[in-house]
Image 1 (cartoon, rainbow, N blue to C red):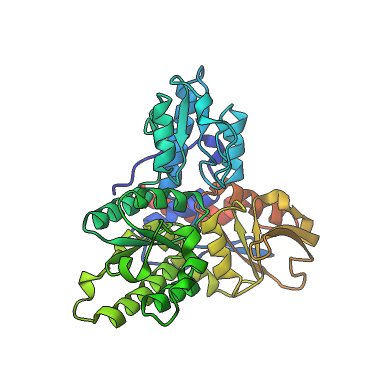
Image 2 (cartoon, rainbow, N blue to C red):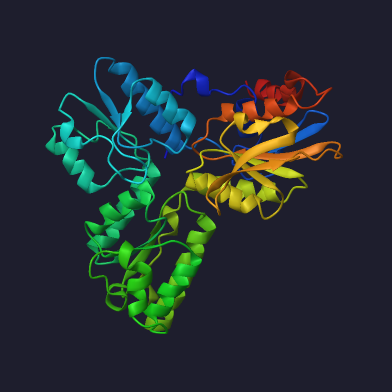
Length: 416
């Protein structure tokens, strides 16, 4: 897929991070170097991964959505639900008069039946279900006119369709209530028997049911609420492939594939495995892979702590937190306003599903303090800039921003 140039609103442009990213593209055009960049401000140093922030699908969605708003000032414009999982972007669209039809969990805010053919509906980057597409069409609305569905989500659907035509069932690695997984399930169930698997533990349970090490009743208990009606794991997993919610940990999707492939080999034999298990590893989203690989490299640094900026309901952001919190104290914040000086920070704990406050979160005696910082794929770079600038305000005698980013600007000048 060629790299398209997107029109991203000025307010999301970032003076610091943008320069670092552009310079890294010049230094490492093949994207093989995962060594984090260092922004040395003296008393505090920021370690910045090679890949993070807005991905192709998010830039595409923002471009389409803002163009729809600008080109249709006299029309009622609706988003099916949050376009991406970032509150800054969604709140700005609301401020511009866009309304949401659904909450992220699928509960209705405005009935589709109340819309008319002059209204505009923007499909979010996660895509939407076939049922909702049909409802919009019944109201005379073209759901594809302003369709921001990520091309890599659509790639997963296309592979699912190819497999469905060959009689394969589908195992979907994802969170069954997430908008993208609901959409993928709908498109997949149109042609295949489907079951959603959350993690490696559930994949193991399904593998044991497949190989009859667990009773068949266990399927209903663990998967009955997230599979197509009448799904029979002994029959329907005779031929199957694994596809995923693109924001899941790519390494975990691969592990899910490996566990289920092993079960299929146990059941059908190694020599015939290609007749029973489809290799779908090429459907894994490249941006998710890049961001997670860069985060793993960030985790290997000697940072004192890490900050992950992004929406609290953003799946890909939470996976970055999951990687980093195994190595150092990690704080998932939505923006700079979550910091109340060096003494207190409010952050999201995904395991308890609640906001928490941590006191004295910045180490006092470390000189310099090394902070690993990154953000989710739906987070504008400017929010990362603002977090860094806020932290810098806690310190005296920091180096000027222009001085710190000068080496990166020189790389760009050489390229020009």
